[in-house]
Structures are given as C-alpha cells and as structure tokens.
Length: 562
Ligand code: ATP
Ligand code: MG
Image (tube, rainbow, N blue to C red; front, side):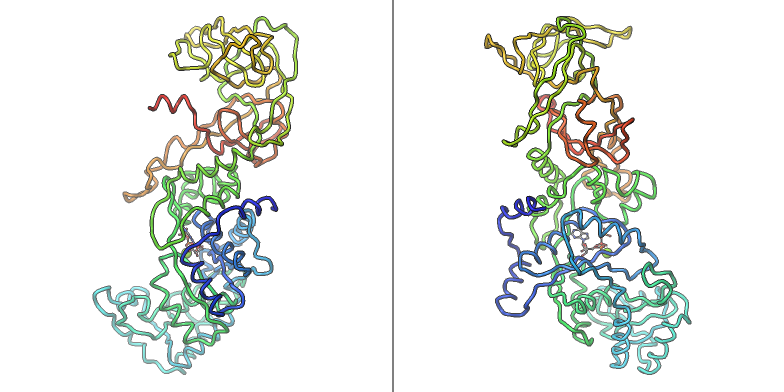
C-alpha cells in the first residue's frame, strides 16, 4: 500500500471545477471537514464507471484531509441483494480505498426518513395520492405542457397522516398509494411536479427484513442521507442535474442536521464496452459471459480476474478530466495504462503459446544446463532466476516461416536467431507431416554464443523465446479480446448483436518455463514478447490456467498492417 501511495504522490495535483469549489468553500470557512460519499445501489457489481466516482470521492476527501463514506443506497428491496453489498465492499477495498468507520446504509435512516415525511405532511407539503403509476405519469404533463393537480392533492394533513400510517402498517398493495411532495405541477422542471417520495414495496429487504412496507425513493433518501451523515459535497453524475432543485427543496423544507450541496460531473463512457449495470446483468443472465467476474467484463471483479492491477485503474482515472463534458474514452487509453504499469512492475517469464518442437542436433543428448535470466529489465534491482536448457525445446510457431520475407528476422531455413538468455541457433532442416505442415525444426547451436553474444562479433537481428521441452509445464491460456466489436455497442437497438464472437480464444497445450508453477493467482507476469498474464482462479497444479491480461504490441504484426 505504501509504495502505491508514493506513486499517487508523484502525480500532479489534480484540479477541476469540483476541487476548485472545495478550495473556495474551505477558504470561506464554510466547512471544518470535507465529507464526500460513494453511494452505490446494491443491485449489481461495480464497473469501471463506478471507479471514476470512487476515485473522485475518496480522492477529494484524502486531498483535503476529509473523509469519504461508503453508503449503500438500499432503498429498493425488489432489486437488491446481500451478495452485491459484500461484493461492493470488497471491490472498493481492492481498488485501494478505505471508508474507515463510515460504512453507511440508506436503510439505517428509514426511521428518520419516516419522521421527516411526517413533518412534511404536517406542514402541508406532502400528500398521499391514490392515482396509479400510469395516471400519475399522465397527470404530470410533458415538457411543453404543464401537469394537472391530482384530485387527492388537497387532502388535509390529518387525513394524509392517517393514510401514511396505514401505508406503513402494510394495509395497501404495491402501487396503491404513494406519498408525493406538494411542489408545483406546472414547474418547467418535471422533477418538481409533485415527485414521489415514498412508495409501497412488499418485498423482503436484505437488511431490515419485513420491518418496512414503505420505502423512500432515491430523491427522498439521497439528500437526506447526505445531510444525516454530514456529507458536505455530494458528487454525482450529470443525469442528476435536473434533480438538484428537488434535492435543495427537500433540504430546505425538512428538519435536517446539515446542508450538503450536490455537484454533477460527466459519466465515464469507454469504447468497445458497456458501463451500465442493467446491460452487464443482461450479459450475465443470457450467458454471453461466464459471470460478473468474466475477465472480459468491465466490472472491477472482471478486471481483477483478468489481472489488471488496481493501480493501473487509478492511474487511468487520474488522467480523465472531471468536467461536465460528455464523451467517450477510447479503450486504447485504458490499455495504455495497463501496459505502462505492468511494464514497470511485472516479472518476465518465457512461455510458448503455440509450440513448435526444435531439436538442436549438435547439443549432446542427455545434457542439460541452467541459464541465467533477468526477471525484470525495467527494474534496476531486479534479481535473476535460472532456466533449464536442453537439446529439445519449443519455440513459437509464428516465429518460423518456411519462406520468410526479407524483413522477417526470425527463424527460417538457414537463418540464425538468438534464443533469449541462451545461444544462437540456425535452422538446418524441417520435418513435415503428411499434410505438409511443419511439425519439427532441426537446428544447430553455436556453443560460443552462450548468453547471447558471438565472440566473432557477428550479429543476428532476431531474438525469440523458447522453453526446454523436457522441463515445460503444460497449461491452458485464455486469450481475451474486447467483448464488443462495435466501438459503440447498441448504437442500433440491441447491444448484444455487437458482441465480438472472438472475444475469447482458449489455447491449450501451451508450454511454460517451470518457475511458473509457483505463480500466485492474480500475480501479474509478462510472457516475454507475448503479453501480460496471470493465473486464473480455475487453475490447479494438474491443470494450470492463465489469463491474458493484455497483449504486447507485436512488432511484426504492426509492420504487416502498415
Ligand atoms: P448504472 O447505470 O451502471 O446502473 P448507476 O448510476 O445506476 O449505474 P449506482 O449504483 O447508482 O449506479 O452508482 C453509484 C455512483 O456511481 C453514482 O453516484 C453514480 O453517479 C456513479 N456512477 C455510475 N456510473 C458511472 C459512470 N459511468 N461514470 C462515473 N460515475 C458513475
Ligand atoms: Mg442508479
């Protein structure tokens, strides 16, 4: 944790309209302590979009010596579940943030919210409505036409109070009655046309069980929970901008212990994926992915399983602007941060994903030796490990061409290459099967080139990776590509049609250097020349499984594309 902190510290001090506002408020002596909150609804798992909000809320609190609460906005028992509550806590911690003693639940405030509702009724600022959801929508009017008053709008406070208590006692069915604020049915802001504050939901709540039959709406619970917790700056995304007048009206008209303010910033959108719990839920339920933690998912669980380090996510978020401009960030920008972080931090290993056997004819049969390999050339203090070398090795099928073009600096008939950390070898022959496919290469090595240099000064352009055949571990490697082939999934109606059919390729029979049997689940490793990988939770000693976190850019592929 300490070194992660150090890495955050070297970043430039962030500045944006929210931080500017906070500095102003501090200078004006408005608050002693800055208090923010991250308020997820426990109806799904957290995704990269949430990470923006988490980093902003916890980040701002830390920068100004304040605190950030984790608040579960558990006001809709029909959709919420204990499973999600636990997962959200775990994911926020994994991302690197700590709410200390400040884990809160909107449901902690149900009693107080009930009392606040009564006080609004007493002040004749709220009423019980019997209209159905459809009628309420109908009466609400449109953007160009004012709404109409409900026939129930002028009930007396006493009558309202009696009905409200009967709602609480469970005397009505879902949707039969609601509590509405009495504001202005002709307001230009639709949110102010007597919004619903409390509704009936007959479902078991994950925390309060069957105690309540009535539940506050988001609008009623949110600002009041902010006020009860002493939140000073309530940061949310732009879709709540139109709710701010209501947020303020409620704070104004209720006996709240503090006066928080709401500020809105733009959501994070990323190309080639979807950031919406509803859509992610659909992918899981329809079986397009293996679960919320499928490594192709943009959920924090999925990213974690894929091997994306939390610091790479924080670095990515730190570079996003906090503003009111809606836009789409290229997935490539996220990939860049992942590579950038892993390049500095992941140890290197040799692994051959698509093996082609090589027999080194002049290497004595039965002989073996250990060669020294550096673990991370990016780290000056990196240590070394020993890797076994022998007469039979595997190389990558793609590192050989029978009829190579001039610029292919790898193996081909009579071509010499360097084996990483080992020797120069020259291909002298190849063996084919009946179908004409090359199944084995015969090579010679130059014993003088141990460690990778020729004493006579001759150069080879290519260096390829390899694994000693007798010592190799067999593994399954899961290669992930973007989940969607369309950069803006669902630009037509159905986002599922934009799924990338090739987003997962399972490669079995991969050959890994033996030290990889010690890799821990989730630990980031670079397979040299290929990409970054980590051990999957499905892995067993009998059947190791690795996930590709992200590919390295392949220089040959890049050249061909040009
Ligand atoms: P979704 O649209 O995926 O269901 P949500 O906004 O309904 O997300 P909540 O659980 O209500 O999910 O979100 C908790 C907090 O995370 C909110 O303050 C919300 O503004 C913020 N948030 C959600 N998605 C994003 C996003 N893409 N970018 C930035 N913040 C987000
Ligand atoms: Mg929401």
